Length: 300
Ligand code: CP
Ligand code: NVA
Image (cartoon, rainbow, N blue to C red):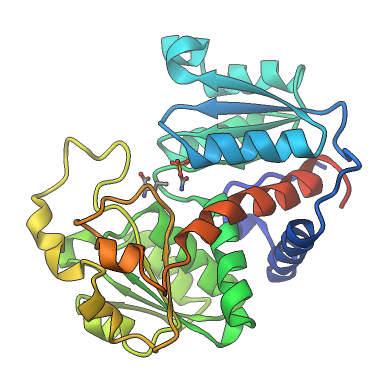
C-alpha cells in the first residue's frame, strides 16, 4: 500500500521520530550507496520555490534517484489538465510525486488518483516537509521535543498549521500569537482541541514568547495571498525583534522557514544574531527529505 505525506497527520508520532532519527543519521553519515538508484521523483511547482526545489533535487541525486521538474506554466496542468489525470499519467512514469500547490484539496486529489506516493511540498494549508526540518533543528539544539515550549508570532498560515499538527502529535506546548483577524484555521483548531490542550492562541506576542525554548515566525503574506491581504500595520507588534526575543528563555533559538522579509516579520539583528538557527534549518530540509524519500520510495 503506498504511503503519502500530505500533512503530518499522515504519520504516527513514532514515525515522525523515526524519520528525524534517520535524517540525523544521514546528516552525520551520508549514505553513498545510492539506495534509490533507478528511481525517479517528479516535482510539480504551481508556486515559486528555492529551498524545496533544490533540496528535493539534491536529496534525490545524493540517494541515486533522478528528478523531473514540472512548472505549472509550462506543463499541461497550467492549461487545465486535471490533477486526477496528471496523477494517473505520472504514476506510469515516475516513482513518487512532490507537489507544491494552492489548495490542500489539489494535493489530496493528486494522491487519491496516483498509485505512487504523493508528497505535499507546501499548500496553502500545510508544509509538512518544512516541519520535519524544523523539528530536526529543534531536536539538535534542545533534545526531547515533548518537554519544550515552542512559540509562533505573526501570521496564522500553513506553517502555523503544520506546527499545530506537530504539537498534537508530539505533545509539546505551542503558543501562537497572531492579530485577531489572522488566526489559524478555525476547523483545525477545533479538531486539535480534542487531541491536545497544549496549543494556546493569544493576540499578545510577549505572552506567547514568554519563557519559550523556540521562537518561530514566517512571512506576513504567503504565496497566493498577495492581492487580498489587509494592511501590514496590524502585524507590526508581532515583529520578531530583539525586544520580543528577550521574553524567551536566554538560550531560546529562532527559526524562520525562509524566505524572510527582513525588517518586516524579523529584524536583521535577530535573523543574523547568535540565537538564529535559520541556516541549519534550511540545510535540514535536505536531510529530512532524504529520510522521507527513503521511507516512501525505498527501504523502510
Ligand atoms: N521554506 C521553503 O519552503 O522555501 P522555498 O519556498 O524556497 O521552497
Ligand atoms: N507561509 C509561506 C511559506 C513559504 C515557504 C508561504 O506559503 O508563502
